[in-house]
Length: 62
Image (cartoon, rainbow, N blue to C red; front, side, top):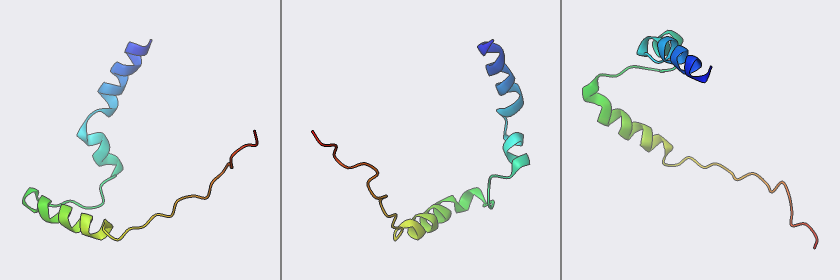
């Protein structure tokens, strides 16, 4: 049963056309511009700050 599901997944979902149909990419760039796109993306994230969530549980009494 599991082998059949894995094979079905491979046949139907493991190809570039599946991703292209759903459009998870936001923009395309030429392969020669990859370095510039990565540098710009990392520069944008340099100042990102994510607050830590408050503690959900304190120390339980002993």
